[in-house]
Length: 506
Ligand code: UN1
Image (tube, rainbow, N blue to C red; front, side):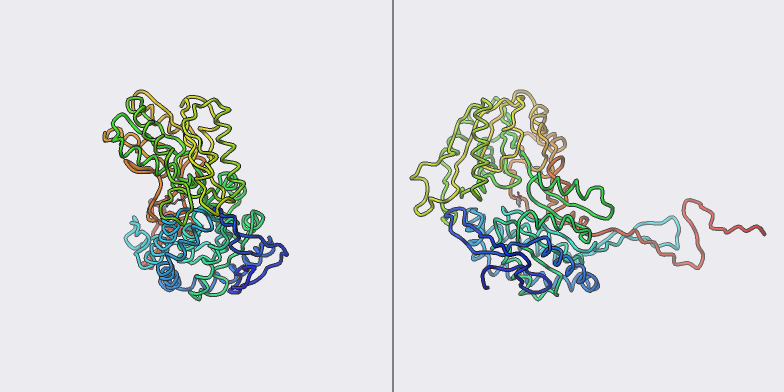
């Protein structure tokens, strides 16, 4: 492919209108991974026009025919997992097992959507009237705008697009500006699959391009995964507009609850995974550990030991546990939150904000390195550091006394409600947590990361409206028709309503 890399609009690779380009940077080394055309709002509008024009023919195909294009993508994802996993790791800094898992998660989502094309759909609904057949149908909504984040640069685009396409919608994809190389590969796969012109379109760029999708009234559905700030803007903008819908998945201030009945091996393992995997940069990562006082001292000792020693390093090295943060601005934000926690008077237990020079791998001096930051805080204090999402390896230990109700009260004392976990051997505690924790995704005796694609992924409260994965995504990209057919020559109404037409002559 020639550089600068191009947009994909109406089945063609194009430069677009703008004169600006931008670079993708490897966050572990600072090296450039390519130059990309920066899309403009006009480029987005052209992509929307192409998607709108392609919609009528695409919706006429059967779901099974549409899924055939996705099966091609599936096989390419499977065949190229190792190669693409390394590109994911290079572009967003996730360690290599996570880079590959991103591609595998993408394959799973495509498999789910394409396989679902052959599954029975809809409900048969009873009628009061014997001669009536009632059932449910779903219709595609049209152009779907997909605005995706950098932390799952292959998986999340397919979360959004695989189902939207199988259901008969066309797509305009605006990937994160931090991971355009991965997005380029996503687009190449649709091109390789020979998807009809205009059905899939991609415009590379920044927030102004994403906003052009939101502003375009020919886009009935916008699917967004990313920051709460942008997601709430989209929800506010589209919420009151008839016919337009926003399906948003945003962040969290997620917690792992460790009760007095916890197995501490499971607790420490789950907490380390939840807090430090992906360098804390999953929207499901845990930044709060709510720990019962009976087990607090031992848990703290073991968790601190792990936080002091987890391996930060080259994402391509299989011995690395945590890669760098994604970019300089984010490094600054995480460092500022660590500083803020100190200003708010917490008790800092581990501070690896600045790594020792010998911890930074050779040739990686320009990476955005950071290690764990762990502190103890009062669960009742109204602190920003324990209530706002940092999106990094920044973790508070919050000690509680008393019963599970108290732990769940602390868990729920944030505006977010995405993911969480309870570690306990007591099924009553587990069941109370399951029913009362305000969460979209909850786990028992596991980390609160690593959801499988067939689960309905999404949160409550400030975390989103619970649409972006699997069956629930179908609801986002389709409209329901409750269909009733009369098999009789007579019209008979339900509810005892008279069907007699009475005239003045009666
Ligand atoms: C995200 O957190 O940004 O559940 C997505 C998980 C992954 C998806 C995470 N399957 O950890």
